[in-house]
Amino acid sequence: MDVAAQNGRDGAGLGPRHVAIIMDGNGRWAQSRGRPRLFGHHAGARRVREIVECCPDFGVKYLTIFAFSTENWKRTQVEVAGLMSLFRRYISKEMTALADKNVRVRFIGDRPRLDAKLVALMDRLEEKTAENDGTHLTIALNYGGRDEVARATKRLAQDVANGSLDPESVDEETLPKYLDTCVLPDPDLVIRTSGEARISNFLLWQSAYAEYEFIDTLWPDFTAEEMGRLCAKFGTRDRRFGGVKT
Image (tube, rainbow, N blue to C red; front, side):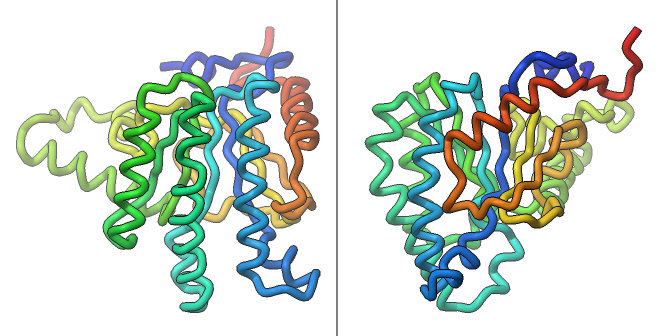
């Protein structure tokens, strides 16, 4: 399938249908205020609600947020434990509101390493919002782009081995069917907050033709207004997907 057709975007003048955000800067935001890093993570979690709620205003149907990477286990035990507690609290607190606001929630990432209670809450939230057709919120939790491709390739190889997939039929449209995001369109716009200019192993396959915005704003300070400005800016870009406009 043509990339532009897949994403439903072909040229300038349209806002992004799918926005993915690397929510960076929580720890620095807290430390600049003389507070522990977890204080910043709690502030960042509160910011998520505002951004989810503003998506319909800007024509954003899909929002994917990077909550915890496969590399984040390298952080201190105190911070990791605090983040896992925060995720459980966030899901429990926001479950009813997300369902009532017609938000469809999905989680991507490798779940087996996560706490069983957290996974149960994730499953429950997905089930509770499964029939919603408003904003599609995808939360990347214990997620890494390379890990995702490795897991997808393993499943693809298993299908080849058991005879359900012909290796001669494998092409660039085959692997995405095995990715965690197989039911989602690729992101049109990827935003990274906090001034860092790297993609940090996020949606490596899916973002091949995404537009990027690296902004200085720390995630807890990221507002609906700034989201709107970036979506409007996206609409001015000429996206040719490797072709030449005639």
